Length: 384
Image (tube, rainbow, N blue to C red; front, side):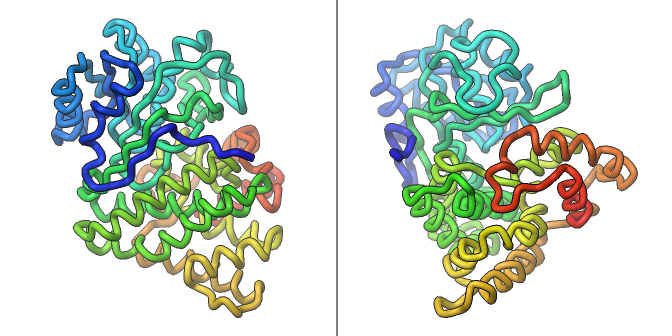
């Protein structure tokens, strides 16, 4: 099955400097630059806007994207796009910004409530092209046909998956991720690892996605801890930037599984950042899922470098579970109970809704072991 990927991809230091040239190749002249207030204040977004203006583009900056962007934000961004008469969307930021930008770009061709478009292949029209410049080596949204947007009416995270959501251009610039603080590096790094693992063990994995997912896992094993220890290590940053792209490309063409299905409700109800929620859940969900695909998880252990090539699948699987727990501990990733705003009584009360929302997302159906709602509730408790 052919992979669905951006038409043009650059993974290199300084890739952002190609933004005007690549946008011009799309026959565009008026850009809506989508970002967040932090990157605007740090000067990153304005630098990219300046590069576009130097290339002859008229630029409008929309810097109102919040973590876990909402449908209201998408509609506000769409209004700004129309007012500016933009013919290309340039996204500068982490996964939330990239997801919002991709949704803004297709919104005009897909009217009506955004919730009507959630699920697989439910967009009716193509939107404007997107040039994606990720600033975190984590979500891989620059390579995916997926967006996750919060429905403000129901307090749920909607997943939309459609080929029309793949950015036209991905500019993966290691220099943009080099300023990430250690905690964010850890959270988005384990998120990247989760993408590689879930794409590899997914029921929809293919030989083509296996190659990307396996490379993602191996790169995480080689570079994640080094990038966390020293953010100035550009070799490690470059390794994680490529891992993020490859992990995103892999799961976009196979699927994510139970970790992602369970992480979205945590973000919607408790506002846990996406990368962190995946990182917190990964060891627990992997332990539950391992019996459904022991050989695949053994491959993951070998690719990650925590099991010898000659180890039995059983030994490699056990080594993987130990390694994931140890990785979270070394990267100082907390448990659920230690996250800000987590209250046990409110958490217990929310478990039925979170389990239903996880199943409704469709991702758990691709898991090696497909859980019931009751099993998902118990997994949340184990992760507590």
